[in-house]
Structures are given as C-alpha cells and as structure tokens.
Image (cartoon, rainbow, N blue to C red; front, side, top):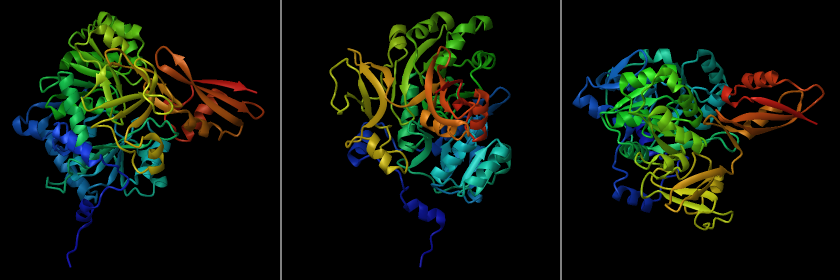
Length: 509
C-alpha cells in the first residue's frame, strides 16, 4: 500500500471553506490575459537571477538586494518546513514594515502555507480571534508577552515565533510542494463591519493580476521605488501595487515605520520614491507641514483612499506638495477603482475614477437590487477577476453578502458621473472609519458593557478634520459613571487595539 506524507495528502485536498470562481468566469479571466498562471512564490526570483545585486528593499538603516532576499526566503522556507509547517497550513503574521515581513511572506508562499495578515496594531483579542478562526498552526509576532497570551487561548497553535528568532529558523534551500495559481495564497482581513473581521482569501492568480495591473496603471516598473508608509498588511500598501507589487515588477520597496514626515520625506528624497499610498488624514498632515521641511515631492504620485477625501484637500495636493494625486476606492475583497495619473486634478479630487480592468463589473442598485437610474445613489455591488466569491469558511454570512450571481454587496453608497466615474457618497454599514482603520461599533459596544458600571452602550462616529472620524462612546451608567480613561483601560485590558478605543464619552440617562 502506498503511504502518503501529510504534505502529499494536503496537495490533493481542496482548501475547506474557500469559494472558487465559477469555471466560466475563470476561463474568461484566463482568456483575457488577467490570470496568467503566476504564483507568488516566484516573488524575488526573476530579478535575483537577472541581477542579484539589484536593491530590492530599503529601510531607514539597511539596504537589501534581490539576491540576498531570495536566498533568505529559500532558507527560511526550509526552516519553517522543518518545523512541520506545510502546504495550506495557516500562519498568523503580525509583523510591522520590516524586511522580515517580506521574507516571511515569500517563504510561506514557497512552501504553500497561507499567511493570515494581522495588523501591527492588533493585540491579544484580535490575534487570538484570527488564530482561532483560521485554525492557525503558527503565530509570528515581535511581541513576546503578546505571543504568550495568544498561545494560551488559541489551541491550534503549535509554534509561536518571535521576529527576533526568525534568523535562526533556517535550513539549506530545497524544493517544496508549492502552490498552484488557483490556490489561495494568503488571507487579508475584512473591515469587520459585522462585529469581527472575516478572512478574505486571495489567490495567486488574482493577486498577481492585481499587482501587475496597478503597477502598469501607475506607470511603475523596475526603475521606480514605492514607499510603504502605511502598514504593509493593508491591501493598499501591500499590492496596489504596494510593496509586494514593487518587487513583483523588479522595483524597490522602501519600508517606513510610519508616515510621519520627519521619517518619510528624507526617504523620498534619498530613494527617489515615485509612488506611495496614504489615507486622507495623513495627506492632510503632509499638505499642512510640507513647507516646513522644504520637501520636493514633484516626482511623487500619491494614491489616496481608505476614507472620504474632501475635494478641498484633493485640490491642495499639487500646490502644497507638487505631487500628482490619484484617488482610490478599494476593498481588500478585491475591487479597485481609481483615477489615472493623467485624469487631471479636479477629476482626482472629486471622483474615485474607473475600475482597474474591463472585466470588473459594478452595479448600483436600490433596496430590491434593481439598478438605479443613471446618476442616482444606491448600494454598490461588484464582481470581477480579483473580487472574492466568498469569505473564508462562513457559508451563512456569504448568503447575505453575495447575490445569487456572485456580486458582492459592498455596503457602500455610490453613484456614477456621466462619464461613468465612480463617486462614493456614504455607507450602509455600521462601521467607523478612524484614520483609515475600520472599527466595528458592535465589537466595541460588546466590550464596553462588560464594565460593571455600564448598563448599556452605543458607539458612534464623530466627524474629525484630521482622522475623518473619531469614536464616541455613549453609555447608560449604573450609579456613578466610569470615566473615559477607565473605559479605555478596560478595552485595552480586554485586548483591543488602541485605534478602537473611544476618543470621547457621553453619558445619558
């Protein structure tokens, strides 16, 4: 009798909980040239073979070549495989904007394991949830205390690796049972609009296309440098084209720890950065203080999205920074609409442009899913070669957020201009957009009522010039109400990320 290893068996077993595209659509996307049979495990390979000394990644303190990163990814892949991590194992990756993020993701791609990309701000509650939801076999994080806390609560974890320990996870490079183009490559997180985030499966086919198409649309190639000023675990800074997209086309990825001007303006000048991605709150800061730094950003294109961009702010970009603005609407779920670099400042300031590709299908509908008249506002539905067909392993939820013919209900309100450019006008979802980070009101409310002096709680958005929205907690108290500081301490103790903590407290009878 033939005996299969665990790794060989898993090659033949479909990933449970993943919804693939229907065959007719998958065939259409392949015939159109969107899906070309590429795999993300090939990241770094081509440039490393052609010119191993070419610079791939730059941080404030170091420069790394394609050759050394390609070798490091191979050795790390072998080391992770020696730990027993194999194809389709889930690994929660909670790393900041460091070179280790890049090599870890590529190493996992090469053994066919699936990174679950947590945000650097995530703490015990979020990481435990992600590990439990994905049934992750491993967690990779820089935080030792946090790792111990999560390991106690997430029973599936067999390995907890600290970022500082990754250098010791190494073995001679060897071949692995790698991924197929149609396989899930990794998981992004949804905005968490139903209480907790869902996992978004991104395949090698669709993400390679997204990186390639957005790089082409932005005129980004091997001669350009991308600045990752936002967390690279966000889709925007990861693959639009982002840090991974920059490497996919042989360019440079410049990794910053924050978008603070005192860190990134020197990097932009030093590395001749040509493209970056910002939230409107950060863009506002840049336009306000760029003059103090005497910064020349005239060679820079700025992708802006993730929150509402006031037209007045959009119009300030070129006069204040000298940069070119492109205005984006995007979701980790896969839809991307954006203005092109030659659309003009007014179009970029007032619309989110047009879809990434001709096979992206956008509908604007009323409450009965009927198309609204041209120019009127309705809910945006989307379908396309990068748009998921179902969140991971949540069949009942998928029945409510996808139409019978596979359109995703975005929950966003939108309209088309006469030129068929998209304009996002609002949202249906109960979510607060705090500086680009999506905060579920339901999630925060469920923790607030755990305070012994809180009888009931509601969480509401407050308009804010810098962040777009802040968080206001409205509570009904039992006897003496808690202070805002006490509530923030409670939420922090319960493991919530700092960006989810209320900025203001209102007490009602």
